[in-house]
Figure 1: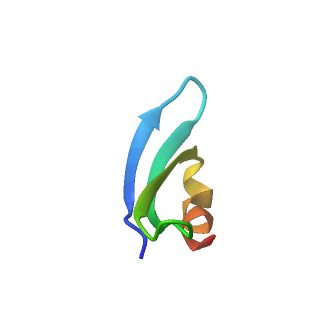
Figure 2: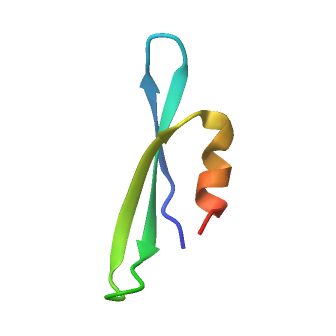
Figure 3: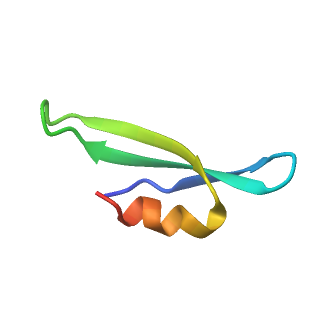
Length: 50
């Protein structure tokens, strides 16, 4: 299950979004957070990717 937290960040020329999702670690079984800054158009692709 992904935790959707998207905050708009202001850049020089284009708008970006910070996306954070919670992923279960295959080694330990604990949950970790994966963060990235992406274009708002590809946020859904980030959350659908495993």
